[in-house]
Length: 260
Image 1 (cartoon, helix red, strand yellow):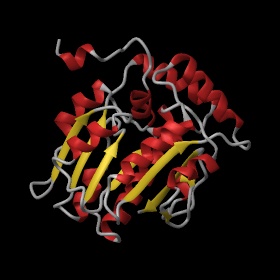
Image 2 (cartoon, helix red, strand yellow):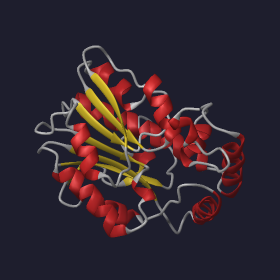
Image 3 (tube, one colour):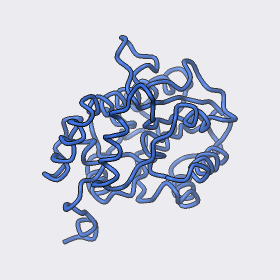
Image 4 (tube, one colour):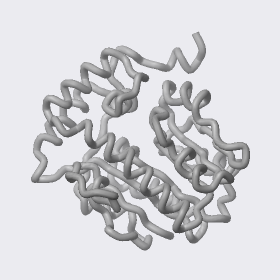
């Protein structure tokens, strides 16, 4: 058994694998599918969050590559490879785009090494690190990315795993402070909302049975991650409402894009 395989715990459900299950992937285990089905019973629309968040990623990356000329992406909290990963969307538009993925899930690492292969003109690398390891992330990313030029920092559904509010804001600020003017922050976050009480029940179930535990924040608290940045229209909204091609129902996953 390899070191990576020895780190994979199949006895408890894991968020990346449940997310994979909800989006129709095959990189999950019975324990993940059981937990995913139970959460979907508590909140029937939860599977739509994963799909909406993925579609938001695609729209945000396309906008940044096409309209802002971004050619470097730092994607922290990558999750399991799926259709239209960041490098695939960006490199279809600009083949010379460079992407660095960061995650600390051993299953993600195992698949990333095999699947996250970019274009010959560009570069796609993977870093095994935790979001909290800011210095490690920046030092390793700088071997592939030119941090003196604009970078898109992708933090989709990952800041939710930092329980302390101030710590989470500090992490995001430190990452953005290290990036050049013209860089962008793309962030999504599960929210607690009075109109969606079943979301809270689903999160409570997850935190009792799954790993890692997650923290919900209000839409206003999510907007704080963009303090000091130029928040692009339409602001911090349900990720399904961020520049969709066709109107879709809101989900309790809020997102925004900000320019440094």
